[in-house]
Length: 252
Image (cartoon, rainbow, N blue to C red):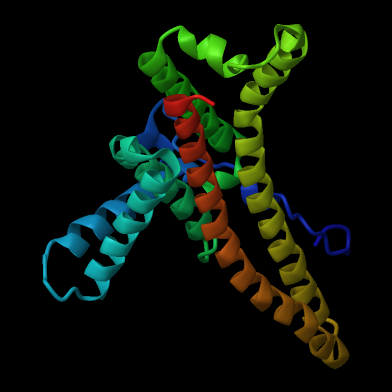
């Protein structure tokens, strides 16, 4: 409340704050860093404790770990080809880092570190740098001539084709980062707005409490939708990475 009026601070949930205080020293260790570490530890725990039994008939945790492994392994093989196996660790780590960032933010007092463009852009730039490195390592300088000016293209079209290919290549980290960042921010802003409506209407008496049922139902539906979006955005980020790696390995 401010000046007698309720205000909706939908973007306040994305503000960073130091969580270690004096223990952090000169390191600005925020809640985003904390949840990144937590997400990584959860994935490691899933793989370690899930695969530890090595049972012929897997339990639930082992089945989940095997399903996660098989899902990414199939993605790498189908999208990149038989060379995809060597990129499995990178794609697996990337997928679950993004997924955990999306899911942890849906928990009470959680924080969605994938809602910050600095995080998503850093991930996207890392992907493009690695993809470019793989392409140069695999094809040498031929990568620049054959990728940005495919074989069979008439030389007269070079002034048109080369700039288009270069711009398309350089726009990849922008589209990767903004897609993930925008989807996470939009979902959480809607959560905040409808939740604030529920509180404001519930404080307006009996009629307001009855009217608050609508925003509350929308928030419940949004939770299911956001769970779907969390998996979908991690999948899109990972599969586009695989497609870029395919281009790097096989060119056009």
